[in-house]
Length: 390
Ligand SMILES: *[C@@H]1O[C@H](CO)[C@@H](O)[C@H](O)[C@H]1NC(C)=O
Ligand SMILES: *[C@@H]1O[C@H](CO)[C@@H](O)[C@H](O)[C@H]1NC(C)=O
Image (cartoon, rainbow, N blue to C red; front, side, top):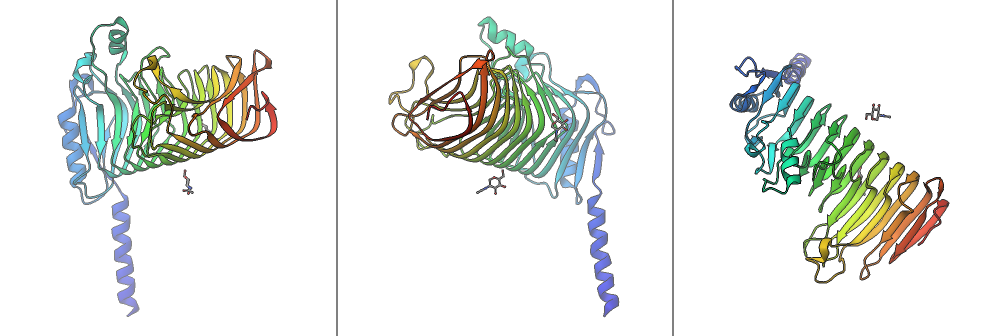
């Protein structure tokens, strides 16, 4: 009897230990040329598909070198048998001809993968040509997001460097449990719409230990985003961390349970911002904590803007329907680049409630900064510089 048990136990152990060893598929062995000039898309897809068909967890491996992905590419996990990984020791580059990916939503897209790790390496979208086109006023494509994760679960992105995206650098869309850690994103301050990471319709996203400098939002949180954790991220230059823009759609899911902790902003337009269109909407923002935040020369360190309506167009009701409640600001310190360091401009129809300010120490040119509130309700405690306007 015990012999049988032992046999079964050791057999299970064998299965487990053999499945722990990832099968690695080296794209160079499949003929990928790492010269940065030969398109490797077909070979990458072949590698992905065989990893996907593997009975054991498998990884696609890109050794050192430069790999050109000329056109938009989609890695689908629909038929994968086990968790997937892509290990990049080299650099993936786009063509300098921005038209080749510029009209796609994503340049490199992962969809419907259950269990995915993308690690190492650099992804360079060579966006400068498109930015220059946009600046010149010529007709140009919108631009592609560099790296998209869609409808996937248990995603890990680690140690990756993303540079010079045409549009957003990364998007997390309809995902569950995405862990982004130790990544670096960089594009120059004047680059248009080059957001760092956009999260939408997703739950359980963690973004930690990362550095993001771009021409737009560091991290933006779109509608339907819940249980999000952002910690030890440094932002700047760029537009800061933004919840929103929310409330464009009349029927819109809300943002709930977000923590932003130990984040530093340097020379950004905003620090922590909540931004909603002045339009009717069912959207909401609730249970948000901003904690241990350092501002260095930030134009709008603490901002709620519910009157967003550029050029006064598309806002017939002129008032936001988004209900903001239970937002805590705890230990926010440093310097503002403008006199008004705290601005809480809430909806006239649905005033903010449960705003809690605690230990705020913000200066403007080494003097006291100002706070300005409209339709904002809540309480203040601890150090309060500027003094509370609630
Ligand atoms: C914070 O993130 C940086 C990378 O940006 C890393 O070097 C550092 O170790 C992290 N700090 C902690 C406490 O994890
Ligand atoms: C809020 O989100 C965190 C993850 O960021 C999660 O651990 C926690 O359980 C969530 N809280 C609620 C009440 O859902």
